[in-house]
Image (cartoon, rainbow, N blue to C red):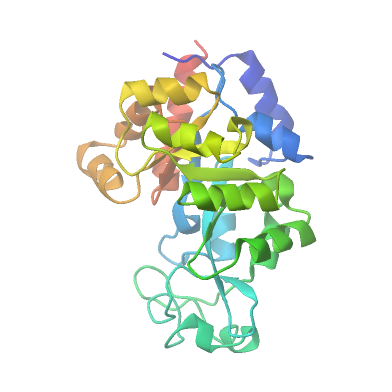
Length: 292
């Protein structure tokens, strides 16, 4: 079992300092924090920002709400307006999550910001569709972002926004193939990359494409990996993100929230979840158990 020692505690005191925040001055600090060590501090990633009643997905107000109780990674979704402004929205269409109708790309930013966001119950809130720039500027010194770049959005444009907002030290770019990871690595040799890795060969392929381990976090999927993959990735200093959103979150509801503790105990380092508060409470218990 991995133990969390005084080094990890001191590291977190430096970066969170009384406000449940993750704060890094440089990309090197972020890289070091997101590299595996035996004194790892497991983290929650709030899927789509951690929506709940009254707090819609991909809203800055939701990000604030989710980050109040724990140091947090926030996964958010990026798409383009008609006038090529990067905004936060998961779906291609506005209907499910806002008072707008039709494709996001049919509207300019000015038009999009006349709509209100809806929570997962379909209730309209007072919150508006945010731009990526607004999210990055808010998140600096508070959270780590994993940026999910939707189909048709150029990685170069997202990286340009990260540079413009000077948000390199709080941003991780999500990729879904070795080709995409290689593209991001070439465009931005300093930025962290989340890559899908479900077998050892996937990491070797990424390396052969020029993507180094010290700039990688591994998304291992929405099912637990076997012990051998966890061990292999950890030996290569790569953190493992387990997607509990969906089935594993449902299992935790049915079997009890201690499931989150057990996912980390078996090798996951970051839990990407639709239940950030419940998962976070269990990870705090895990951390306390490792200090004994």
